[in-house]
Length: 117
Image (cartoon, rainbow, N blue to C red; front, side, top):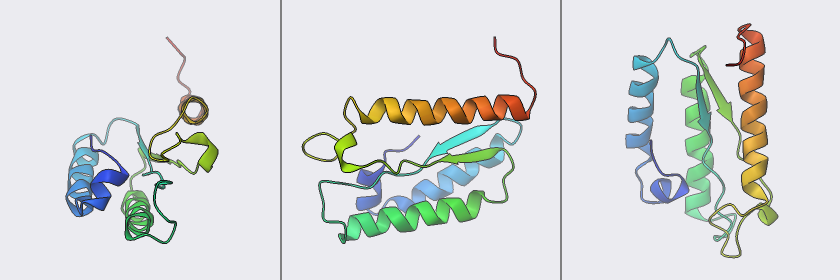
C-alpha cells in the first residue's frame, strides 16, 4: 500500500495513516496484517527519520488497537538482517519476516478454526 521508512522520512506519514484507516474501515470483514515500518540502519539511531518511524509505528498501534481484524507484525530485526547500506533486508532478514508472518497467519487460522486450502 505504501513504502516504509522512506515515506515517513518524506513526511508522508499522516497521509499514510489516513489511507490505512480508510483501508481498514472498508475491509472490516477481512483479517489484515500490517507490518510495522522498519528502523533505518543507514541512519543514526537518533536521526529524525528513525524518530519518525518510532512515532509512526506508535500511532498505527494506537489507531489499530480497536480494530479486531487487524494484527501488527513487528519488524524489529537486528542490523545483520539488512544489506551493507542498511536500508533493505538481506537474505537473512527476509526469511525471518516470512517466518513471523507465517506464524501470525497460522495463529489467525487456529483462532478462527480455519482449515488450509
